[in-house]
Structures are given as C-alpha cells and as structure tokens.
Image: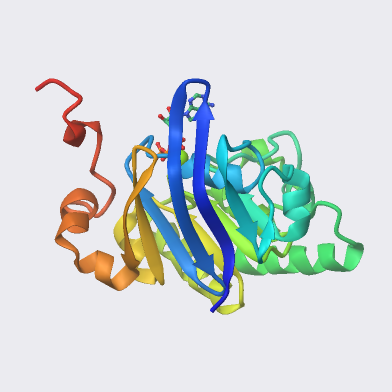
Amino acid sequence: MAALIEVEDLSVNYGVIKAVRGISFKVEKGELVTLIGANGAGKSTTMRTIAGLIKPRSGKIFFDGRNITGVPSHAIVRLGISLSPEGRQVFPRMSVEANLEMGAFCANRRILRRGLDQAYGLFPVLAERRRQIAGTLSGGEQQMLTVARALMSEPKLLMLDEPSLGLSPILVREIFELLKRIRSMGTTILLVEQNARMALKISNRGYGLETGEIVFSDTGEKLLASPQVIEAYLAASGSVRKSIFSSGSVPA
Ligand SMILES: Nc1ncnc2c1ncn2[C@@H]1O[C@H](COP(=O)(O)OP(=O)(O)OP(=O)(O)O)[C@@H](O)[C@H]1O
Ligand SMILES: [Mg+2]
C-alpha cells in the first residue's frame, strides 16, 4: 500500500515550547489511523501543521508522494486535505448552509450541490436547520456542522480533531458509525479522539503521543489488547485518563 500522508521527523515549536519533537508516522491510502495521547501531547499541533496552519520548525510532510512542507492552508485544502478542528469552530453569524459552502472552498456548483446533499444525508438535523444561524445551534449540532463542513471539499485525507467531544453517547456512536462509512467510501482518515477505546476499535492503526513524541504504534486491535495502552488510556471509563500526574511532574 502507498502512504497518502507521511510525516518525517517533524518538530513544531510555539516560541520556546517544543510541542512536537521529531515525530514520524504515516497513513496509508484507505486507512483510518488514530493519534492517542494526553492533553497537551501535541495531537492538535500535528494536525494543524499538516493542514498548513502552523509552519514546522523542521521535518517534512509528504502527501501522495509530494513534499507539502510549508504549503499554506488554502493550497492544502485544494490538494485534498481537510481538517475538522477541535472545539466546534463554526462561523457563528452565518447560516448552516453558508458554513457548509465555506467548506467547499472554491468548488464549482455541481460539487457544491453534491457536498450539500451528502452533508444533509449524513446529518439530517443540519438539513432541517439549513437556514438557522450557526451560532444558535446546540453544541452537538455545531460539532456535526464542523465535521460536515470538513467533508464539503471532498478530501482525500480527512483529519478530525476530537469529533465526538461534548456529544451525547448516542451521537458519539453515530459519529463512529459515520467515520466507518466515510472510510468505506474511500476517504483516508486521521483521527484524534478522547474516547480511545471506541477510536481504536474502528482504527486500522494507532500511534501514541506523549509530550510531543511517538512512544508506541501498532494495529488498533493490538493496541486495544496492550497492557501499557490499557493502563494508560483505556482503564475506567474508556476515555483518556493519562495526565500530567503520571509524569511525576505534579507533587503528591
Ligand atoms: N498557540 C499556542 N501557543 C503556545 N503554546 C501552545 C499553543 N498551542 C498549543 N500549545 C502548547 O503545545 C502543546 C501541545 O498542544 P496541543 O494542542 O497540540 O495538544 P493536544 O495533544 O491536542 O492536547 P488536547 O488533548 O488537550 O487537545 C501544549 O503544551 C500546549 O500548551
Ligand atoms: Mg487537541
């Protein structure tokens, strides 16, 4: 299989903060790959860097064999990479439909229509509310809009940063079903999820990030059975429990 996205020795800093420290990983065409890790591990930074929103300090990013390191975000979308960002980032004063249209970027009318039909098919509640101002949607509806908007550009690589955050258990299950469907339609997915157990269950492979470094990687199935992963990320409620407390940096 060929890698759709390949990250090579990538480092990203915010001023003096080293958020990502020399990570390498890849996502093959058609795969769903999950990044798991505690708060502050560098998951969002990694995705934002691939999306061209942050410039890396060093390292390379290849998309479909082409070096895209440092390519600006608008050009990244055109190449076929789309990010559903963390935390319901809708355009609050615009309607639901206008938000979706923003996701299509500069697509022609035919692609736009196809995208809207798909979004409304996947999320019927958005169809009912197409004229509603996005800022007045419920939190869960805004989350759905964020995911639906990322799909509008018909990406080859869809990156989702915590798509199920704040959704009710029923909607969380629906989101995971949806991700399986999107993958079966041929879209490659890079996922970040607090709900590590559900994410790994549907993942081909996963990588563990700790303080900006990749500390393990394996198939989703093997990670689900790994004592290290169970202890750190899957115990109790099934969500990510590992925190700064485990690093010994916090006094007892
Ligand atoms: N704009 C910024 N300026 C300075 N530091 C930042 C900035 N954004 C993130 N960081 C820092 O970079 C590190 C990685 O942050 P990042 O958002 O990538 O983590 P994350 O793994 O997505 O965490 P979470 O699970 O909480 O979303 C953290 O230490 C964070 O404080
Ligand atoms: Mg994050």
